[in-house]
Length: 63
Image (cartoon, rainbow, N blue to C red; front, side, top):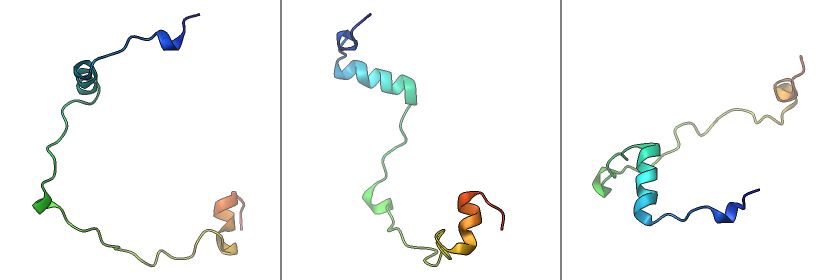
């Protein structure tokens, strides 16, 4: 068997090339003036799944 610690070590440039091959070119970075603050759009999401009327969905049973 081969030891996984015997794997070849790559340079930073080789790793950068492998990332480029796998993921392609990255999109341009978002500039600070283009950023927006995130806001909560739906603060009331309804009853949590721990309510008895939702147990059938959580546990796969029929009501």
